[in-house]
Amino acid sequence: MAEILETRHFRTLFISDIHLGSKAAKTDFLLDFLRYHEADTIVLVGDVVDGWRLKRSWYWPQGCNDVVQKLLRKARKGTRIVYIPGNHDEFLRAFPGVHFGGIEVADRMVHEAADGRKYLVLHGDEFDVVVRNIRLLAYLGDWAYDAAIAINVVLAAVRRRLNLPYWSFSAWAKLQVKQAVNFIGEFQKVVAEEARRNNVDGVICGHIHHAVMEDIDGIRYINTGDWVESCTAIVEHRDGTFELISWQHSGQKAEAPVLLSPPVPAKSDMQAA
Image 1 (tube, helix red, strand yellow):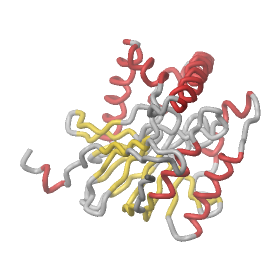
Image 2: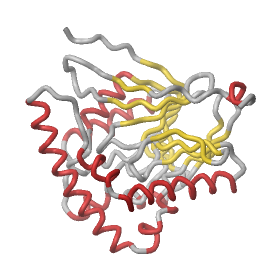
Image 3: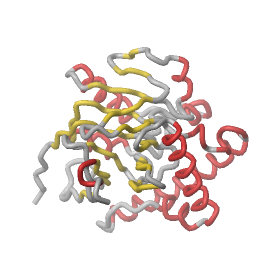
């Protein structure tokens, strides 16, 4: 029996690293997620369009159009949508403050949650030394990542035939490499320090495709993850608490397992800690 899902409504929805134009983009998962999740504000936290891959070879299937149209429809219906470009869609950084079809482009923003806490929202690539200073090495790493994603595609097809849930080889492989784990840790610390310099309570970013919510020396660090490997998003509830959602449902299939992390306590709940 197919599970009947109810639409959930939130104050804010944060998603990033969709990589439209990449064969690895899970547009079917994202479209399904957007079908059941509404928000007053949607913040696109970078790398929505993968300009790097589109420059190498054009790939824009119907699923990419469907995602764009879905977002534009939400904007027309009154959802505020803010697009913060990343390194893969950096061409949009030349248009801060410009609106495209109701979607506002911003370099970064400060989001005030319902509980009064303030969060710096940015993609995060400016704190990635490889992307910032050694662009050729970044492109080579991007090529290796493409190879890992290609393995993902094959494994996903096999697991579907065996009725097994989706599992990301590339995400698993990344976390087995000590240098990658160290990079993630250092990235989180540097981004959290940027939030501290901006006198805010936390930071919401993307870029490294590693979804997590944790405290780093008094700063709330939140990473939205991606829609290439983990299919994750961050939502803010009406009381200012945050929730990390991992969406493992593609299309109208038999089940819709949704993995939810515990919501982040509201500010009043944290005062005693």
